[in-house]
Amino acid sequence: MKKAFITGINGQDGSYLTEHLLNSGYEVAGLVRRSSVSENQTYRINHLEDKIKTYYGDLIDKSSITNALKDFKPNLIFNLAAQSHVRLSFDMPAFTTQVNAIGALNVFDSVKEICPDARVYQASSSEMFGSSVDDDNFQRETTPMTPVSPYGCSKLYAYSIARNFRKAYGLFISNGILFNHESPRRGTNFVTAKVIKGALNIKKGYTDKLEMGNLDSYRDWGHSSDYTKAMIKLLNYENPEDIVISTGKAYSVRELCEVVFNELGLDYKDHIVINERFFRPQELSYLQGDSSKGRKMLNWEPEFTFKTLLSDMIKHFEKE
Image (cartoon, rainbow, N blue to C red; front, side, top):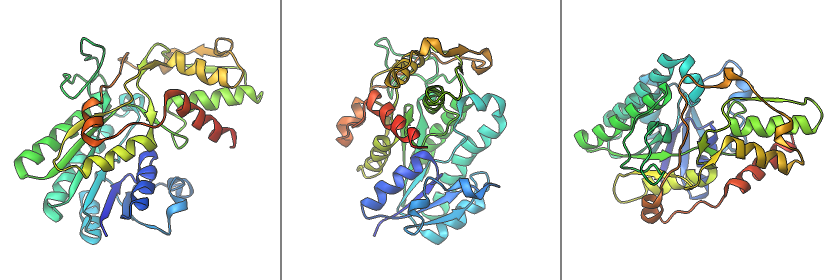
């Protein structure tokens, strides 16, 4: 039986990835960063607890990674753990860098020492492109990377050191450059979940307004379940590769609000209030990924569209 190890197994992506791996016959284990509120830290994977093994650890603590890899001896390793909120990275740049950059280095160094034959997936991000867009309004593997946030900068370091370890030490490390991806398991401090929960609260009469930041930012939004399937395909590909995973279609936050409110029988213009405190110190206005390389190479296509993604999230949050 193949064995897969996931850092950040209790996150949005980690939970979907675990389900897909178990369905494919893998034995799965993962690293969980301990929270003082233990009831909440594993809620995304509680339904899988009798099928997986978890280790307490932290990417900043290399020994916890090393000990887990020594004990579990995985064939595949998915480094998904991160400080993943772009806006918060401006408030906590040093912490973001420690976790996302040095943390990734700790993972690769531990793999080199403990299980150099394992295949490693590094969760890279479209935020690495920053303000750089090709002439056809797409970002792809060859687009220059000019990140505009501490989060993007930290992810660019991890992406670069992954490529360095691949070439310098012969490790099998692939970078999946994922564009924005959401799901019913998305944290409520991310814009898709914030808009949906806010609109539902308005529909239920709990409030009448929803405070938002920049409505004119464009993002390429996909579904986490689709993208985690691509991660598995990438690590099972014959060679290590760096590929973009995206839907290829960008929508503005304004369009996001319009679709969500319309589905609930509301007009977003009657309820959205702009609050400048939600603006980033440096805004990233446009992300749209060209995933043609990955689609062809991996024989992968997303199943969810922008609207079916939002419908899936709305149906879930309506039950809460």
